[in-house]
Image (spheres, each protein chain N blue to C red):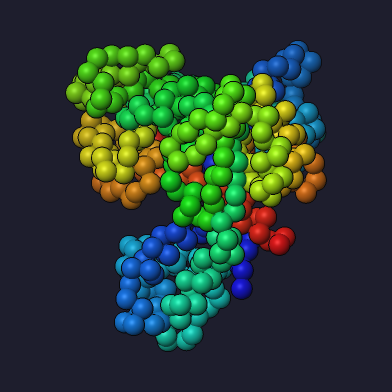
Length: 208
Length: 208
């Protein structure tokens, strides 16, 4: 079963649930209730109940979830147990910060390569190769890449976006602070790094 | 009027509304309706109507919003027209990428200084000074800093968080991939840079 259409908030907690479930001795915890999981993670019970219901149904009355099945469903909801490959274009400060970030794998995603127009030769940032941009097309097609991350400036973001679409990428995460156009069938998500801080600022202004 | 408690999604569009409103000649657009704004920005009318209602009430029947008042209310909702000062601790790759990022000011926030334990002397990244961490306490207290950004690794994030709280910071944005504890009265927001890509991955798996 590959559950989909879950919310971003629920998604954010899946690695936390998985970490806990894999730590617990399976022989002692054949079944686990939302209540137990909530207590062990200091999370709200209603929230955990809702998350697990979205991912793995309602569980068995009185017993809760069969742990092995819950693990499987949690893993499936991160991408049906296969790593999805992503590429990144723009190996500036932000791009390099993302290449160093090791949270992607917890969500079943592997950044397979990064590309930059300034790189004439292959260089290494952390564990990932930064390649010259003229190798982009072949790499994406050869590896059937589906996810793209744009970390170039606003001026070249649309050109990079078009290139990604041409190479078969179906979902794009854009960090450039500009509006991009994608054709139908391609999903675009814009990431505004200032937004969470703006939200906090709005919250503290409530009390002024 | 300083409207608060608006959603993150609404907040993300405020700079876009403000940019449009400031571009339009005020003498021609004394009043503006949600419909006109939606059309000019290629946004959904229901969405714009909801955003503006949250920020500036319902407007006048048939006329819409008095443009000058709407601008004021939009600006107020970004922090009551005063820049809020923020500090950043951890001037590694991600920290430096954020210091370069010029979207904060659009939301009424100024990163006033950055701090790093590796810096013995003041250095400059972009427009912002990176100072040695032992100057942190005095800087925060002297400047009445309220917002803190944590871009250190998981190992030192809690210590940095505690330091921020001691220095009077009331809202903290944490980029370290770990759980932090803050006392009551301090707001903490965790930013997971992998989450949006994980969400996209989940979306494309729907169609497999």
